[in-house]
Length: 331
Image 1 (cartoon, rainbow, N blue to C red):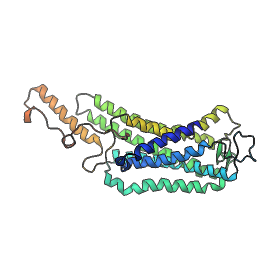
Image 2: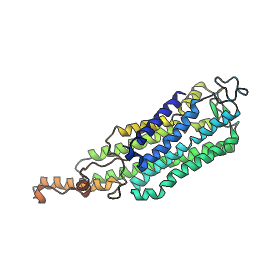
Image 3: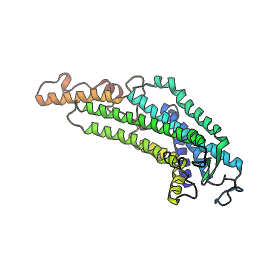
Image 4: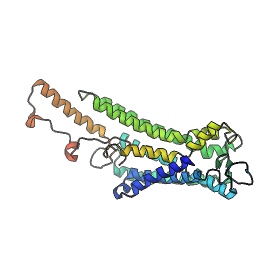
């Protein structure tokens, strides 16, 4: 219950912080976060009840059991529906990949925006309703019965396959972003006299990618252990407690990543403006190239036109700042 309560308040904060700001509500990325937070709250509420929905007449020895078959299936339904948050994590990772690596603009994103919401919701509700016949009580709540007691087709269809596919996609998208940034930063060093800025940029992107992967990994992969092995209330106490604590924790993990991004500069986010490139690495390379040219001319004693300086790149003159957004942060 403790971790479920943490998730509930963490996801609720994300919703409140976005929905109370009109401009934030219109942002494409924030809409994905809204969807993810809603289903994190659904999961948290389902887990807050813990063992209470378990049928009392069939599991009287389980502390807190006071439900019936209907309450057990209801809890199982909403826990399974919480998997929709996983699919929204995939949409979020895809967003970063398209904006940073593929250089998509806002009008490009609008073309597939409905699918980035519809696919998680349709798949999530489909799996939740499809699992109604197989939801049963386990040691710490009601959901799909793990192996070997549970049906292997149900474990694979409702748990293992959604988790494995989502983990593979999220990891692939985020590491694609990181390696793209790394290549760009390496190329930018050829235009600069030092590597400090490029190095800091590379590290910031790496850590943000890593935090998103860890936020997902903390809660979900451990369920593989639950559903591919018989782990219940009679299993190792430490492992059972760990599973019970981390299973509902996804909302709180997402809150930590969201809060961390808010503590950085409010401009550090990937832009999807139609007027300029959303991948800052191209403009940064042009900008640092001008600085390097300026420095080299000063050292050689040659005269620099236009009053002794090199004109800044278009991105700087048009937008009033040479600061460039880092992927992975939110306003």
